[in-house]
Structure formats: structure tokens, C-alpha cells
Image (cartoon, rainbow, N blue to C red; front, side, top):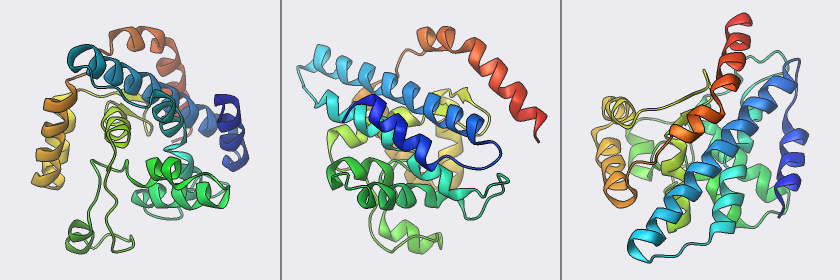
Length: 210
């Protein structure tokens, strides 16, 4: 599956009066997550000799947020809780005849993965099953996703993200710290420089429509 094919899929599901901007935000975020994921994978191989399926990582990173578009109507108003965008993305990808191996990146990247017990305990509007990363590739994309946000596009500091996770559920914080021990903290300096102008411009637009 080529990057251009995945972009066409994003184009297909982006909609509404802010279609151009929401597509740009979601796609750019996906490209950033792809780059962070590949950096993590490279470090894993360089430091420990552990090889991953980098092509699968690329595809998974570019597909993981395809369900975001389904969470908003044509006026960009929320139509469901944002936590549902993972399972909505999974359903889209399965309907598009994408393999479950690739579609799982959508359903397993929320937070640090959500298990059945947490869904029941927090009364989340999700099927009562586990949505947790299983493969190394899924874990990498899930972890990389924590270093960039879409709502007000920005790069995230690990400690700030950890604090936010622990406020929601202390278990989420423990899992995030485990990922940090396993994968380290990616170097975001090059990406910050590359996307500095884009972040400034897109956040000016975000502010203008709120």
C-alpha cells in the first residue's frame, strides 16, 4: 500500500466546510507520527539489533487516525465522543478491505491501549473487548502518537503527557513509563524545526474558527 493510496483514503473520508483544513491537520499529524515511529524503530535496531517491519509501521502510522473524520459533522461539530475514533477507523479500514493486521493500528492507538476492564470501569462507549497494542509495530505507533497532538497541533513533552495520563488512570501512566523504558524518548528537534512554520499557520487558523 503506497503513501499516495493512503492519502486518497484520507481525502475520501474528510468532509464538511473545513474539509481542506481537517484533512491537512490529520494527514500532517499522521506523517509526523510516521517519522517518529521510524526513528523509534531505527533506534531499536541500532541499540539492540531488534528488527521491525518498517513498511507495516509506515502504513499503520498513516492509517491510524482515519476514523477522526467520522467524529464530526459537516459543520465540524462533534457527533460522538472522540475516544470512538479508533474503532470507527478500524471499521472504515475493514470495510475498505484493508487487512486486519493494518486496520488494528486504528483501534489500538488510543491512549496507551484500552483494555476491557478499563472500558467497563470508566463506562466508555466502546465494545467490551481489549483494544491494546499486541505487536511491536503497534506499540511503536501507539507510543509515537503520544508525542504529537491534533486538536491544537503541537509536539508533546513526555513528562506532560505522563502527568495527563496519570490523572486519567494511574495504570495508563505505568504503561507509558514502560514504553519509555522500552523505546526511549524520541528526538523531536528536527521535526520541530521542519514543522515550525506549519504549526504557527495552522494554529492561527484553529484560533480563527473557534
